[in-house]
Image (tube, rainbow, N blue to C red):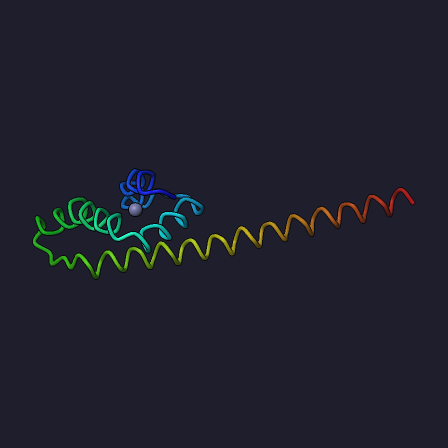
Length: 106
Ligand SMILES: [Zn+2]
């Protein structure tokens, strides 16, 4: 993922509206690109921090952003595991069907 597409995805990331694959690529890019990480911090501060501060609550930008990034990374892992599980399940289903069919044919 390049900086341009990473920057475009920042609002989706902040809203939590990202699919597993783009989220994984986004996290990888932001993790290795200081300028996109900074852009993310700024937009996160504007989108989440300001409304929080308006409500009179404390807001720790780095802590909350780090927590959000870790949460997203966990979600990616869980969803990938689920998808891997579904994939295996499908293969098992196909094999079972094939086995049953060949059993019927022969
Ligand atoms: Zn970048």
